[in-house]
Image: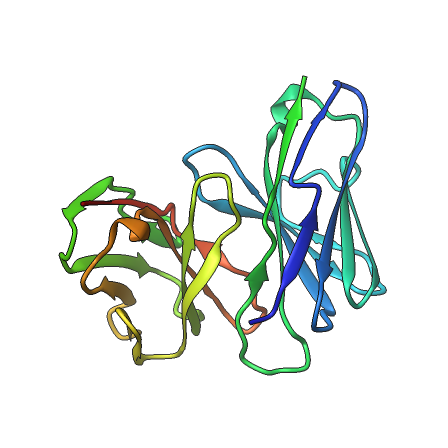
Length: 117
Length: 110
């Protein structure tokens, strides 16, 4: 099946610093990628939809200036958590669809566990 | 009412049992239905994918979608300890934005 690679898998940063997470589709092109956040024992909550070559679409309640999304190519989207604080500590997961195939499922990356200290 | 309702469990069964997991939803625009398996601290892994109503079988797994009742199910036959994980239902409309259930934690005891 299609492979989505997410990096890093784990990161610890100091409060006030920024962290960049990468999401790559390895064997297909994805015009759209999705970013989710998951708190312990909770479900995945969609944060934003990343569109190649245009601005991301953010879900209600998600600060676009804090969670910067860049989708510069058909195989790469990045999420930057700016001025991170301990409450941003969470599991961040990206997903992507093969835009060349209709009615297909989304594949997920391995996730990034962010801890802000 | 939440868009997708899923009993979080936990659910504990003996090895070899048939497991039944289900979700209900309220948004009639949903047309893509998925089941994901998630191990602790890992990304979700797609198990089953169904477009619109009907049944789909893959090995020990069977997914059912009843759009008239807004109800989807996942059945696991001959459950194994390696099936122990959190199972998430997810669904979307034509925009492919997934809405997830809370997940059901399953433990299969040897």
